[in-house]
Image (cartoon, rainbow, N blue to C red; front, side, top):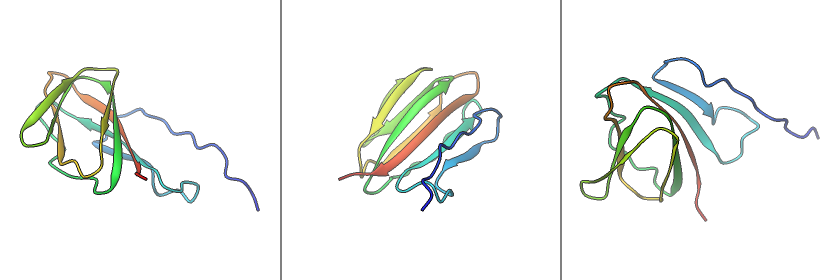
Length: 108
């Protein structure tokens, strides 16, 4: 049986959503995507159910709303951890495009 190899993807462009992991037979439990939002846009409130989520801000700044209207503002080059069952939303609060990578994985 052949071992899966390394998967390499480009993070260039301004497409609103680009799936990075999840459709590949090489991936077991991770899901990932590149999100690009213009100023004022938001992803929409959602919950990743029993999965943990990591958000890595590549460009711009965001407000991450969670837990009954609490929010945290995050800048470029910031890593954010979101626990399972956390209702949250990502909003572009800056004047430039927001670009970030999210990664979800099953919690134990």
